[in-house]
Image 1 (cartoon, rainbow, N blue to C red):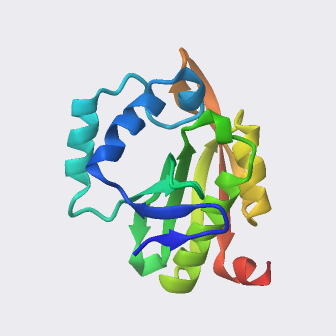
Image 2: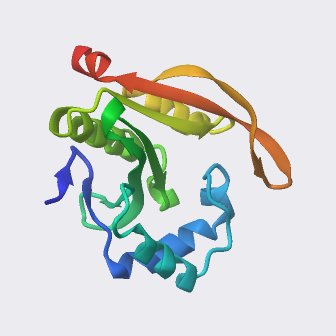
Length: 174
């Protein structure tokens, strides 16, 4: 069953979504702050899709109000014993950047993770240089916990990541 936000619908990934994922991963502007490496091919994405089956990792496709696929999101490191997971998202269609879609994706996911799954903590890593994403996360109640120095090697150099989180009690207070 899809998750509906104010501007987005989050649904299961379909085979036909994979070519879009490849396009986004290979776009230098989209990939600039992603954890993944660029230059992914369709065969590699198909293998990734198959490898997801039977894991705790969950990936959803993001559709705009008009039904157009604009990105993807998901959770990794789901730890039931500690009631926590790590959240990630990517808005791949650049023409919808800075229009509130990322914020709506995060709010929709948090509503599901806290209200439906009853998790206690959701955290994420974000590139320190990704001011757009950090603003969106802060709007949703995430707090910076620290900087992980030289945490990723991207574009020939090391870059810092910011660790951010939100607790269920903070979500409820918003």
